[in-house]
Image (tube, rainbow, N blue to C red):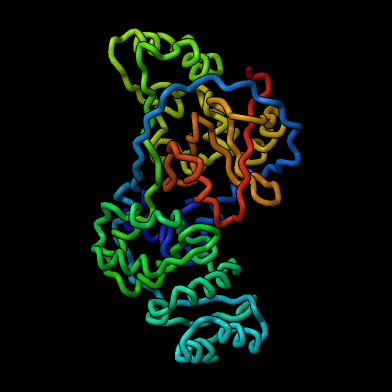
Length: 411
């Protein structure tokens, strides 16, 4: 068992696995987060059979939402090491003149252009050049220059923090930082470093702030940035609720006999009742919901990704063959088929990129809510999430298309 300091050091150096909105301070560690995505599904939507039409979805009832952000366990943030070396920007351009012309095309001051074009700050790399950047320059960039430069930096896999930034809804920054322990002045500084990309508000400058923030301030910032948006979902039931429809919907996969007594008892009550949706979930997701993997309990925990979580949703005992991405893809191809129209409880919701490759898969619950684990590793919890928040997590991979899948033979 590694000490907490050792775990966090690995976390920062990029050796601990994360996933889609992920967990690291340095560019190297951001790269590790992305590499941890490799076990995610890569099934092509074109390879799946033709979709069948979904019958009219039964009513899931009246849902009550309580959104909140799930924070990482404290042991992931025991200590933040000091910054190592200078900031570096990597450019996939081998022509010095072309790179200099690019710099002078940006909305920079004359002094900033002179500094960036100083070849004493340049170093040759396998793909082009790197430039050593003083943190002060990053803080002084205009919003227009930041957007221009970071769009260029995001085209290189070496600039992992810029290629896969933290993303917020365009008007979601203030809400995300509500309740943070970070001082208001520091929050304002973080906000000043944001920029827009693909219809989202982005932040990429953790490395910069490591040169400016104290260890405690960095820990507070990380704790806020790495929260996972989720919600508590309840089903409101009254004597007027349609019991048959509720049992039909939530009792999918031959579970009606298990949940009917509970729902029937609540509909017979003279007053309105609210029951947590977790009480209607199968045993495995019910236990996993809002938790982080603990490898001390089970060595396979660190490998449990979206495949494993989704394909085991209804299994009383999890099938660890789904830890093998190739096997999981075979099952998706052979045992599932697309569904047109509204999904039903327990259907799979797949996220495809523009090329038709599946980037992620999760389980449909009701309305616009899914049960999901966004990657592998102990830093990713199992949560209920709105589909809009889920799509935001994968925005760095381009346009996202949703598709619904259902196990063959299901009603």
